[in-house]
Amino acid sequence: MVNVDRCTFCVTTNELGDVGPLNVPIRIIPDDALLEIFISFVDEAERIEAWYTLVHVCRRWRYIVFNSPRRLNLRLLCTYSTPVREKLDVWPALPIIIRKSVDPTSLLAGADNILAALEHHDRMCHIDLWDVPSSLLERFATATKEPFPALTYLELWSNDESVPTLPDSFLGGYAPRLRTLYLIGIPFPALPKLLLSSNALVNLDLSDTPDSGYISPEAMVNCLTTLRRLESLKLGFRSPHSRPKANRRPPPLERAVLSTLTWFQFKGVSEYLEDLVSLIDAPLLDTVRVTLFNQLIFHISQFPRFIGRAENLKAFTAGLVVLYNQSVKVTLYPQAGKEDRPMVALAISCSQSDWQLSSLKQVCKSFRPLLFDLERLDIHEDKYWGPHWRDDMESPQWLSLFRPFIAVKDLYLSEQLSLRVAPTLQELARERTTGVLPMLHNLFLEGLQESGTVREAIGQFVAGRQLSECPTVTVNRWERR
Image (tube, rainbow, N blue to C red; front, top):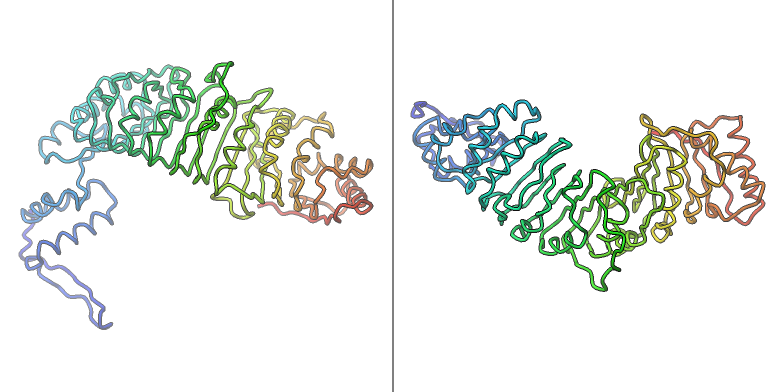
């Protein structure tokens, strides 16, 4: 303990503009004022255990701290290295936080500490564990069969291929204060039962779900309708084997309304996506990120309609197509230069460039209602993880990429795309075809030279457009950032 009778506290005031620091004896500061000082100290420290320092100063400070647990947000931090039983015997019965370890070896070594903390299920408010080994997850599931009435945050990650399924008894099927639930790589088919008691949920993330954790779109929507405060929803499957049955029923005439949802993220097959979005409306949605597994045919007629029912996702004017070595991605924005929110992004997992173009053709054809106002289109490969180009790709494959973009005025092409697209544009000029990019005004090409095959081909394209009823095209050099 510190003898605070001889200590002073420095106070600075500038009400008159000329008053400097004042040394005030701490013993004369009222308890209410000290509490406000403690609150500022804890907030600025941004550490859960910052209040430990305060209670070790003197009895008076300890009394003030422990008489204001909510104002100071007092919580006990437990990690894999914390001697939990000794710690919980010393401190008052405060809410408990279990924090992650990114090292599974350390997590296994400290498993007994984690499990000891879980025995206090009625005080557990936050659980955050990463890279949980299968052996520990089994013990974790056994230790969480009681209700967790105070739990507000739960995040569990596992990278194991043979991760066990969480049982129906997980959390006792009752977590009424839960606001954030992240189950990454962990199967939990009994989730709907838990969500019936968790209507305060704001964030739900079920990414990288193994096949053993499959939940049908209908069952998922049924439990989502009870989540009146849900703002963020992320669903993702580990493999394309997680899919609905072939004889799916048509969507109902009435859809469930997720009135607070603003963020939607999905990874899986197009059939699951279609069934899911056909069952829901999300009028406040402003961010959509979808990744589809590679398929021969993509059925996504319901997805654009789902987007169209969101007030914030209308009148897209800018689009971006990026080709990677393992996927291709289309992103739509309301305005060029506004690449944050709102936005719609759809990626397809495929590696060969001809498959990527084939997938893009199908996706953009389905997206046609969303492309009517698109005035700018950027197409480029990723600088570091670009695709493996095939040299035998023919002009019709490239034309299929541009046909849906009937309103585009400004087209930006990377150097690699320019080399491959220029001959196609040259062929358009020879055949005097005006149905592709009919509104094009400006063509921006990365790495454009004063002469060469690209310059010659583009020159013929521009000349051909001048002979048609289409707008005159201006060619510019593009310096991609």
